[in-house]
Amino acid sequence: MPVITYREALNQALREEMRQDPDVFIVGEEVAEYQGAYKVTEGMLAEFGPQRVVDTPISEEAIAGIGVGAALAGLKPVIEMMTVNFSLLALDQIVNHAAKYLYMSGGQYNVPMVMRAPTGVGLQLGAQHSQNFESWFVHCPGLKVVLPATPYDAKGLLKSSIRDPDPVIFLEHELIYLTKGEVPDEDYVVPLGVADIKRKGTDVSIICYSRMALFAMKAAERLEEEGISAEVVDLRTLRPLDVDAVLESVRKTHRAVVCEEDWPMCGMGAELSATIMEGAFDYLDAPVKRISGVDVPMPYAKNLEKLAVPGEEDIFQACRQIVAGEI
Image (cartoon, rainbow, N blue to C red; front, side):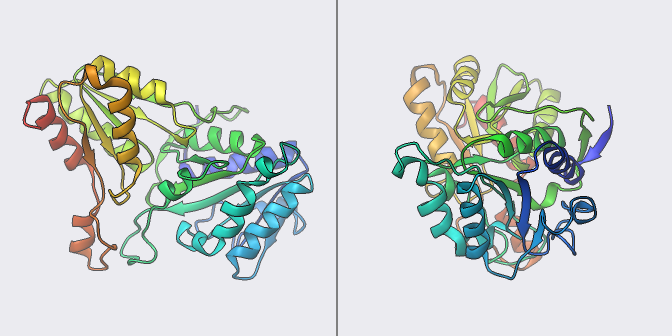
């Protein structure tokens, strides 16, 4: 099976869907001539032309508005935000329009739009360009929220998102575009709302997504050397959330470490902790342990940025402590 990067997997997904369906098109800042801020749309303008790969002015609300309007007209837009940080300028179109038309029209009008955006910490990009807003979008009924961690999942989930009848927020961590993995050449999809057990275990469940899933896999390998069997549950989709997969894992291991790069207040870690408490409280041998980013705007200084972002060591130590009964 070919080994390609996360970025190349996304490019494959876009090309395949655009070749199969003439209603699919891409719109955003620098997606055509510059080929995307992270080069995900490389070569797309040459293959599909300016009618289907469309550069826009710097206006995120306009980009989202074009997407909503095109979707209501029967097309399947894939809009690209240069980073998720800029999506704040388009929240009215996303939350008040894309997410609500199906409900407000009594089921008459779907909005089959995908919003792609890089997310998370970069490398010294500062407080305004190093944020995670998945919990904001997850909060809104009417939106689906996807955060793949591997190239295989990135391709399969993006294809599913483009084919989905509802608006999908598709978030790609900025620091995993160059990670590599096996990706089939042929057409395949990964269903939305289905978690993946990346590694089976019996002592502790690590519930995670996006870049934290890659850290969790490395932590699980180290834990195995100490005789601790960790199960890694990669959520892949946060809304709809695969509650059954989470609870089934926790009922087996009796311990849970939930991981997010986002701030802790009202984040996915809090939601997952509540979900586990409501559905598997009697199975727990220890309180749920949350791993998250530090509750401050991202520092620019390199040493402080490193301290603010959770990683492999945090997951490793949390699992050791919870299995040892120290939590």
